[in-house]
Image 1: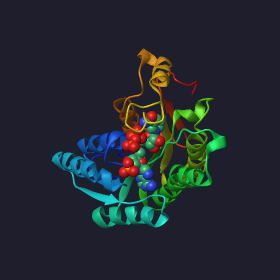
Image 2 (image 1 turned 180 degrees about the vertical axis):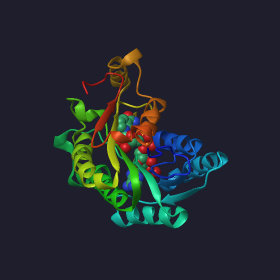
Image 3 (image 1 turned 45 degrees about the vertical axis):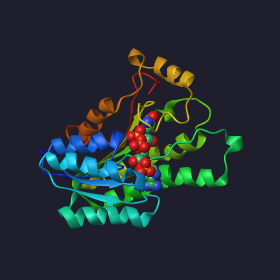
Image 4 (image 1 turned 30 degrees about the horizontal axis):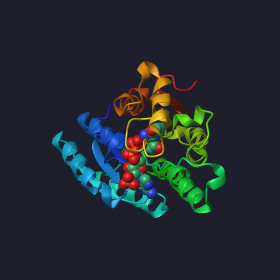
Length: 251
Ligand SMILES: NC(=O)c1ccc[n+]([C@@H]2O[C@H](COP(=O)([O-])OP(=O)(O)OC[C@H]3O[C@@H](n4cnc5c(N)ncnc54)[C@H](OP(=O)(O)O)[C@@H]3O)[C@@H](O)[C@H]2O)c1
C-alpha cells in the first residue's frame, strides 16, 4: 500500500502565513512535511516570517514565496521555487480568496473582475500547475465556501466566484487520476477569522452562529483535520467538495 503520510513530503500552502493557511502550514510541518509557504500582501510578511519560524522549529525545511496568484506567472513561479528548493511537490493547498458582500445592483465591473480573478482564475491555474508539477499520488485541496450550499443575498461575486471550483475539481479528478492525484475542495461555514467580520453586522454574526452546532462559528481548528485527512489517509476521496459547517447548510 502507498504511504500517504506527510512525513518527508513537500507541501505548497498558498495563503499559508496566517489564519486557516497558517494553521495548515504549522500542522503539516508537525507531521513532518517540508513547507513552501506562499503569502500575498506586504502587510502579511510579518505573519509569513512568524509562521516560517514556527514551521522550522518543528525540524522541517521551509521557504516563503510572495506572489499575486491572480497572475499566472506568479502561480508558475510558486511551483518553480518549490521544485528548485525541494526537488518535487506532493501536496498543494490553496487557501487564497477574497470576500465581498454587496448587492448585485451596486457591484462594479472592477469588483466583479477582481473577485473572479482571485476566487476562480487563481484557483484554476493553481490547479493546473499543481496537476502538472505534483509527484504521482499527490493531493490537491482548494478552499471553497459553504455559501455554495446556502440561499442568500449579497455574496454573488464571492460565492459565484468560488462556485466554479466544484466543476474544476470534478474535471481535474478525472484528468489527474492516471497519476493517482486526488483533487478536492473543502467548504467551511462562516469561519472565525478576520476575513469573515468586516462585511457582517453583529446581528448577522449571531444568526450565523445560531445555524450551527453549539451556536458557534466554524473554527480553523475544526477544518485543518479534514484538510490533513484529505492530504493523507483520505486519498481515496477525489472530485468532491466537502462541506464542514456544523450543520449550517444541508450539504
Ligand atoms: N473566514 C470565513 O468565513 C471563510 C468561510 C468559508 C471559506 N473561507 C475561505 O477560506 C480561505 C481562507 O480564509 P481565512 O478565513 O483563513 O482568511 P485569510 O487568511 O484572509 O485567507 C485569504 C488569503 O488569500 C490571500 N489572497 C488575497 N488575494 C490574493 C492574491 N491576489 N494572490 C494570492 N493570495 C491572495 C490573502 O493574503 P493577503 O491577506 O496577504 O492579501 C490571505 O492569505 C479563503 O479562501 C476563504 O474564501 C473563509
